[in-house]
Length: 122
Image (cartoon, rainbow, N blue to C red; front, side, top):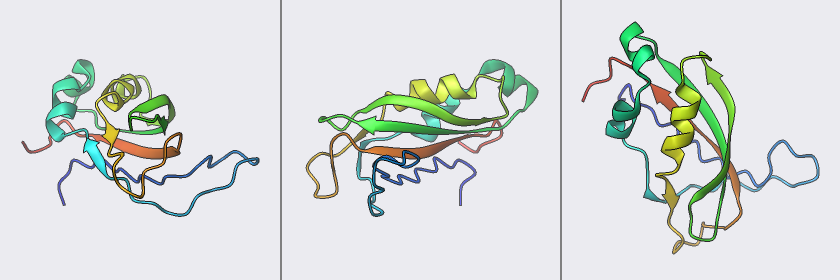
């Protein structure tokens, strides 16, 4: 398993954490565009790279009708203060789900993780 882990848990959770909204069944995401290890390396926060700091960010986003990520929020960022959260938000703009598959549903909320490792293999 590579050290890069774009833990796309893709939990397609239709409102997880909101008591008034039901949770959908597990539903695998099918990506039209996804974050690559090269994207993470190219956008790695400079100070964190120089200090050899690794990080992990969990984002919660919604899909629009074109499969793009919208309304993304940082759910957790470890460690904080190194810029991993803002980079993960920027990288989420690359991502889009395929809309031509039966599992796609517009306006679906889900969470995924983005891992940062300054020593990742190329």
